[in-house]
Amino acid sequence: VVIAIVLWWLGASWLVATTSFQSLLLNAVALAFVTELDELIYTVLVPEDIKATVQSYAIARPLRANNPFAVDDQEVCWESFKARRDRHLFLRIVGMALTVFVVVGLPVLFMRCMQ
Image (cartoon, rainbow, N blue to C red; front, side, top):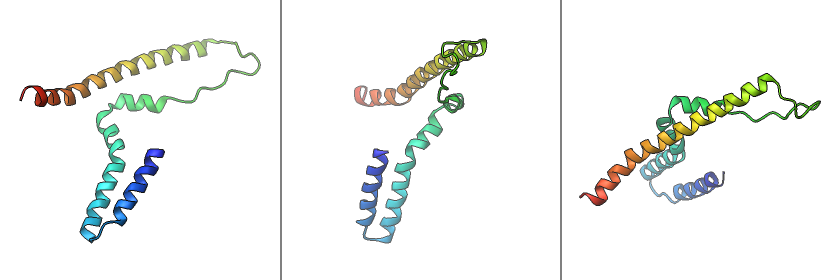
């Protein structure tokens, strides 16, 4: 939220300081691109199953009031499902990190060291 407020403040100051209409239009489009860049990156780089997993996360419910230590079969099943889901998510995140390293890191390494 703080980043969005600072970005809004700097962008508004930047647009107010613009002198011509063409520059104003170009700066407004650039500001819109910068503010939407995080969602664009999420949409392009994150696989659909990770997006579905992120959507499936919910706030944990409190335990039942009558017996807070009671565990039934449904809760055990749900806990094992969450453990598998979390492990799968971790493996997908590691895979995404390796992909980003290959896509971004190797060209940078090539440009820095091999040219």
